[in-house]
Amino acid sequence: MDFITEHKSFFSATIVIIVAIVASRIIRRLLKRFFDESSEHLNVDPTRYRFFRNMVDLLIFTIAGMLVAYSIPALRTLGLTLFAGAGIFAAIVGFASQQAFSNIISGIFIVIFRPFRVNDIIKVGSFDSGIVEDITLRHTVIRSFENRRLVIPNAVISEQTVLNSSLVDEHVCMYIDIGISYESDVDKAMSIMQSECSSHPLCVDQRTTEQEVAGKPKVEVRVIALGDTAVTLRASVWADDSIKGSDMKNDLLLSIKKRFDKEGVEFPFHHRTTVFNK
Image (cartoon, rainbow, N blue to C red; front, side, top):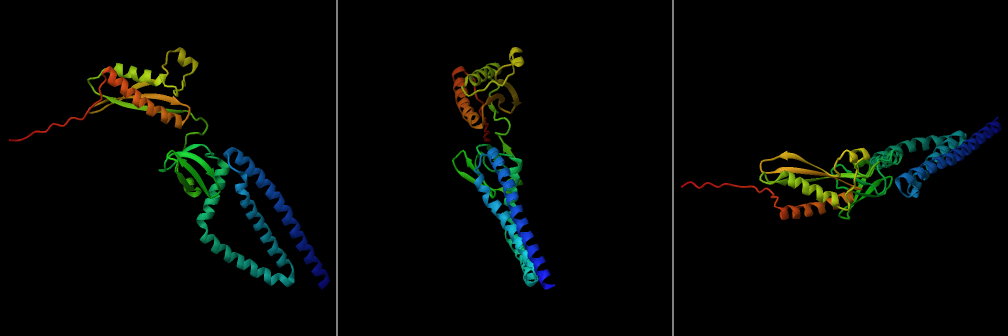
């Protein structure tokens, strides 16, 4: 009877080991395919996720080892001890590494849903805008336009609003807001702004054929505010992306300033009247 029981235990242990090996290989292939496809969309190195596959292997074989120990009567006590010890150990590690696991889970969500990719221009919450330089399961590295690196944990990114300037369409509309005095010729100022913006080499024509035939201008300039001392004009200028748009905006502010000075369009100045009592 003991001989039969031992053979049954050995057979059960063998089945558990075989199932663990097969499950490990299947899961590794599925994870590799998933991470390879996701890495192509995110433009990241798929080998960065290799440790995650290894962690899954460790979990599978740990459970298989405990089941094997529990299936053999001589090792059953040891198996129960390992199960209890593993539970306590998992609780300790889970409590100590709660933030780390949160970052890993958030990194997996980034891989799945792809809210941004490497080389995308994004802004995370109140952080500075920048270009995504690297994405790992723990953190995301953003290179600011000052060439500084923002290393943001993925868990933090998951809780923030992400402004992605490269998602779907990279074209960006830049607002050129300039105030002129009430004594200045508004039509002349609007014409100058329209001319300078339209002739800039980075300005993109976003008009459809129908809009162009209908006479819609390449750059629209409107009065957007009548302030205490200034009439504020806004030119809406399109560019290929945020970086080119920023460069174009800086160029236009300078060229419009020079044209206004040359053609007599005045900028407003604050005036203060001081009264002296005798």
